[in-house]
Image (cartoon, rainbow, N blue to C red; front, side, top):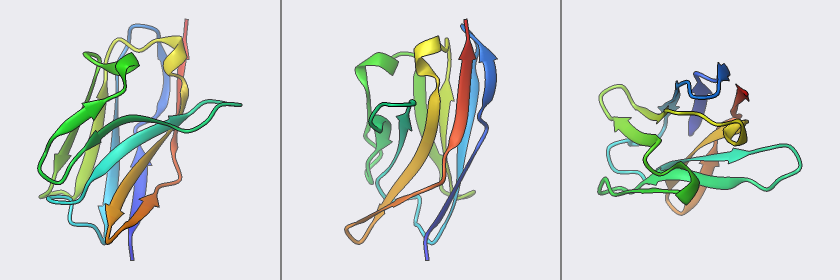
Length: 115
């Protein structure tokens, strides 16, 4: 069974940083495609960043050069380092992972950015 648990969200001032972490079980973090999505109130859930099984990373244009996705297979975690946060980055952030053609989701962590 796959479990994804996000942590690290909170309130930060614009220009600040946060590091989100996704603790996993039932997933081989070393090879599984994983990613982070976000959803603001009244908006659809959008991809923020992902990392392929081979380690290739992709980012939404709006977060390029500010956010970095990484994985630590020894700790079975995937992280999202977010720098220079903007008010428009405020959202619930979800960790996602793929295994055997199924996409799994965590419950999300709230990020609030004050201007």
